[in-house]
Image (cartoon, rainbow, N blue to C red):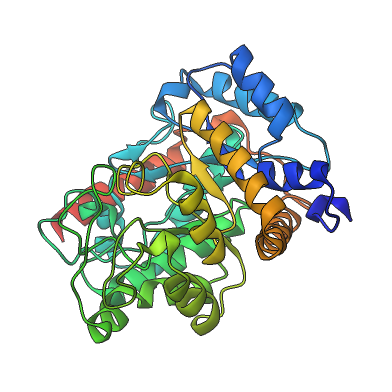
Length: 369
């Protein structure tokens, strides 16, 4: 079956390499260079940001166009970061959600499930299939510049319960969830967008604090897991988690039993960009069992990554086999969530009274806890 890549021709390698990329766009509509890249590479998905958003109907139409440009047997998975709080790409008239800390502070798992369901309905209403949420990091370091109130709680127990409930609610509504950033970004003192964070913890601390929420996400059937561009010397002193076989294959896949899609954090982030050659990043991450690579804005980098993945598959039989396995997992995700998808919610879901009530309750009760 060519969709999942069982042959070894150059064309198949190119197709598999494209399927392993989720790429961003420069603006609110496609330009000629982006169309040419989509035609040639056939990326596995797209991610939209605030720069791509003007208003809900425009987002819906852009997502429809992106889907129309790819073959029906390889529909793109259209992605967004819609967490609530500071990370919210589609704003009013969509519901403006408070940070997930407020949702966690309400302390009721059914409430968290309801928020997950509501958020899922709104992102699906504007054409997205996957939301890179929830954050499964534990807010355990007050000096952390990037996680903070994005996390449900400051304890691993609290984060674990609410992460599982949120995933259940979101995926019940047909939206693919993503637990991020494995094995944890909550105890960093630096921002991986700007530099490579290093977490100096012993294995026992990591086991007790960082890992339980991700184990809960796996148990809840999460569709995808995103890696952290973070170095954990106690687990692997040579490579950040995105590029570490010990961490991703050894802990997430083998110990936790996760057989789903692993997505890298953005390859444009300075924790990895310029620190490691791109092809080295791709090779090490692929060896670590990363399936899909995020390139969130720079088209030339997406093109370089596509060509790099092709070269790796052409020159290394093991890498070719890894590409086949990655595409199988990506296609299995499509089959699980897109084949029998419920009808797309209408745009009237955005900012509706039910969702506004949830957001107001989270803001009122969660801020006081």
